[in-house]
Length: 137
Image 1 (cartoon, one colour):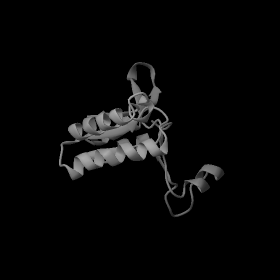
Image 2 (cartoon, one colour):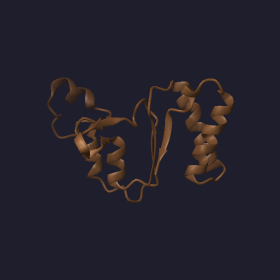
Image 3 (tube, helix red, strand yellow):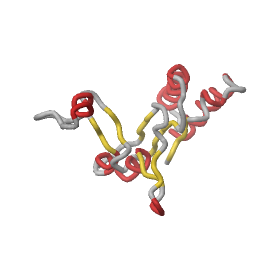
Image 4 (cartoon, helix red, strand yellow):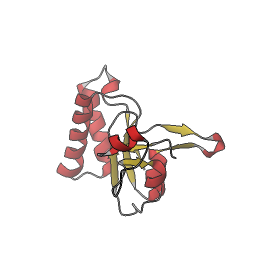
């Protein structure tokens, strides 16, 4: 779970030098570090960046990565991407989802399905705009 993670602000220094900066975080959040957090009161984690739902297969242990780390930490739902989705399509999909969830008050699974359905109707011959997003419970 060290090979999956998120690069945050300040990571450039640690990444280029190979050493963490003195007296501050290195900006690299590994899946292992995420798995050690207490996210039991976290209803939803959205990682809409490209390929955030992928991970490494480790022998008979299954797929490791961000998805597994957030689930171990206690997050109830995750929205992630399985492939490269354009920024425009990601923005549209997330706007649709949040409108359905927060604006209309739908439960997360229903809001996700409705948002994906709206995107599917908008792009019926182009599933790469909407089908790459998955909801994991």
